[in-house]
Image (cartoon, rainbow, N blue to C red; front, side, top):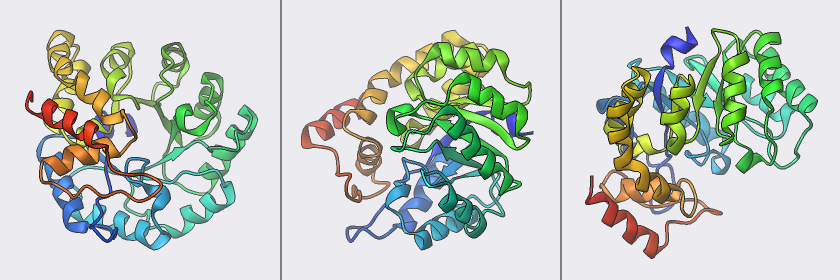
Length: 293
């Protein structure tokens, strides 16, 4: 069921802020309407792109509830619950409003760099604390430690509700090993917008995307073409976005995507420290690129 419902494009939503750095729910509503109108298959809230580490517990609850309400059952909502303190995450799984969540997306622990056995035990503990399907999130560029293909397969086969992975290691050999050895019902999606097309060609089920915040129609149609095996058409769409992918991540995420959305009049261009808005040079490049779309 997870593979059926989360096949295609999921968008890792930004969290817009007002000039006084409060959550801008009006702008968040505009972004949700925009991406759903233009065809994404599901929403992810409280991911890295949503600046979750800078949100308070109460703000997280409010953002989750707002996303449920605004999406109004039109698409599944996946909630990000990740961190490097297993005990704190167990508390989050008990206290955050997860009743309407379709699944939990959980980034592997960052900074403390656990062993593969530590990663296995961490995710096993999370799975025991919730009946919700858990999607692993492997992003070693941020966490400092990759979840090995062997650990992914061990979790997928030994822990009932470890149900998928967002793979953002950039290691195509690792991705192919996971795709070769995984259970048939285990969801595998790309976490790299620029690699989504070739990774789908290798057998992935879609992508959890940053780019789909700002060009959801172009991106989600490219993904659907790829999933149909129409790679010639998908490549033509993808070629239009290659420079955009680079601009999105040149300085930091979500500075790039917030700059895109701000230039489109969707949100205001504010981030919470330690992140800062895109530099004037980066913003100028985005303005030039938008003229090509």
